Length: 505
Ligand SMILES: Nc1ncnc2c1ncn2[C@@H]1O[C@H](COP(=O)(O)OP(=O)(O)OP(=O)(O)O)[C@@H](O)[C@H]1O
Ligand SMILES: [Mg+2]
Image 1 (spheres, rainbow, N blue to C red):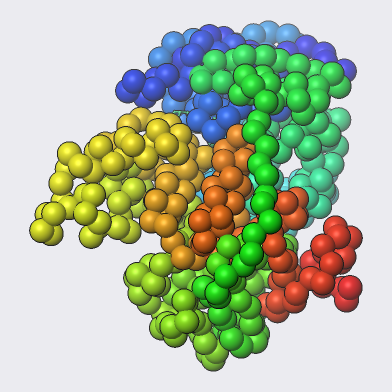
Image 2: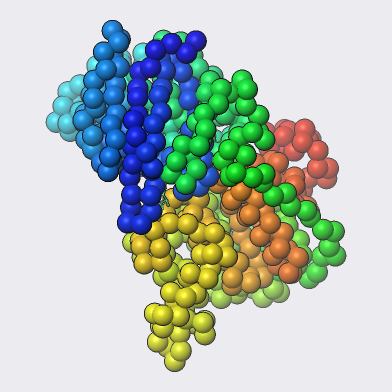
């Protein structure tokens, strides 16, 4: 099927300070092809795609677009309008939609001025309807985006890109927030679109979907392209070796005697403004030396449960006890003081303060620690030393301790949060989707750290949509569905799957 190229990236390089994020990368994309772009966190995948989309100006190299009759035309670099005009569409790693606008306005705002917006609405609706029919990607157009599920939002992001008549579609980790079923559906739709000549580059850390849905795989490591392989000839081992240059570490879980309860939640009820923001009569407990896994498809109350335990929402009734003491349910600092370490679901919004430095983010919850202050004064040198120690211990890679934390790659932001949480030796760790978007090595690191914390005596709540992760790490498993929590008596996949779908098991 690999016909003629539609896109040629030639020797693209980009540095940020001393970080060489892309180092002379050359890559071709063929018409109708699905190319998977793989690599560890910080390997340079997003940077490369941002150069293609005109968000970043390359330091050197060129990009050519080949038209239907085989003529190559250089793309004007560093200009998103030129990339859009050349038929390139990009769906970013993080949601970019305005939450208070409906999907239709979001889609139209991508390409039309505000004044034209109203006038062109009926025409736009017809066009979107056709795209939905052709692609099989369907989402409600008249509901504020903030009220859509993550799966629906993701479809709106893709519809928005397709609305601009693209023939090259770039998807940066499109399935990081989707359930396996939603992801499969998305890829089936994408495969159907390639039959009409669309060419796709997608970035993913999930090897299962890469092997199932791509035609070819290109691997980046430390800013360089280290290999290209046809998906037919690839397997998980081959790819892992290309990505990290070695096999990934496997972890082992020791049998441990559990201790006293560190968290007791008793009949917690929260009446939120919508179903997915509500919980009814939730009771659970987590003991020392224990990991409680909470399985479930996203949107069933996980976020509000995590927020309640973090002190971010107030309960209507019920109690939360940490280490035997009742705590106020709407005071996050009180909860941090009580010894709760949080690994939040939205690491950009709730995990870091983007405009503060990497070093400041590492100490942000721990300003009274003797390591970084004495007599109430912060010691800059000590903070820098602390930060570089933690950066090497937790393998946080990026532009250095003084740089803004928002400049770290997705996976490295997560490592920063892990460093902060684990160093505080918390009594309870609340880990919400902790390995979402992480590469295999980084995900194994998180698993190992959680097991280490369990061994040291922490209790852990692991909220995850990844059933494999829940099964391999949890001592006990509960399933959340529609704001209610049930204990899983058996740990077999099928039973858990049924419970996650809300069926009696
Ligand atoms: N605007 C920027 N300023 C400074 N450094 C940056 C910037 N963008 C990226 N970097 C750095 O460039 C490197 C590559 O980052 P990039 O986001 O391309 O990685 P990635 O392969 O997409 O990783 P992930 O899988 O974690 O998303 C990282 O070290 C990152 O910190
Ligand atoms: Mg990225």
